[in-house]
Picture 1 (cartoon, protein in one colour):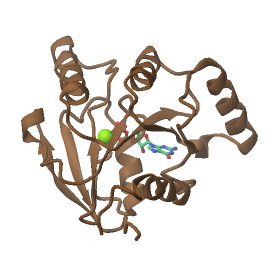
Picture 2: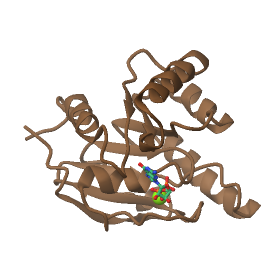
Picture 3: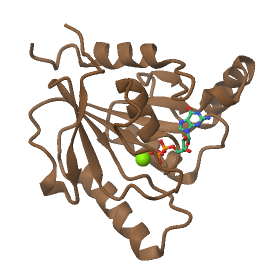
Picture 4: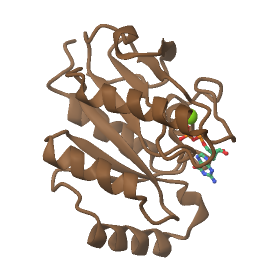
Length: 201
Ligand SMILES: Nc1nc2c(ncn2[C@@H]2O[C@H](COP(=O)(O)OP(=O)(O)O)[C@@H](O)[C@H]2O)c(=O)[nH]1
Ligand SMILES: [Mg+2]
């Protein structure tokens, strides 16, 4: 069976955990700090520029946004953490929702943790990776905006990150560009393969 990523539609927004859709299919969570390229990656995977609103203003995504992928799985676009510009109370609300999501016992299949290939990991990235390692949460690491560097630089950055970050041995690592459509098929296949036993039809 294969997933038609092009058949991705907006499902809705959840302002708290109770408003999330029923856990009736595998859920893929997009995590990573604001502006790392979560919405752009969702659009790129779905090959639909208009799907998730891509925002140039950090911290605009305030809720969990759900997408229905081919009636087979959900994409969950989590509010990014580390909002440099958001007021403190807003920041706390985002973080609370984000935390709530991960400790709610809500079933999700896989986290795609996004990091900008050009930037050093933030302390939130390190915390998130530690948390997922300790909680046995399956995740892939997705380096974004790879159009900004040469192939050699990308390889060097990934080697460097792998030295300083504690990636789980099962965590696949991808280098993508939503803008230049680099690495998208690899990521789609990785998701499909990962979900093979969880998809019913
Ligand atoms: N050069 C480049 N810019 C990107 C890429 N993906 C996203 N961006 C830009 O990064 C900014 C934030 O993207 P967005 O998807 O809204 O990030 P989000 O906050 O994580 O959802 C926007 O200005 C995008 O155009 C990419 O692959 N390459
Ligand atoms: Mg976004």
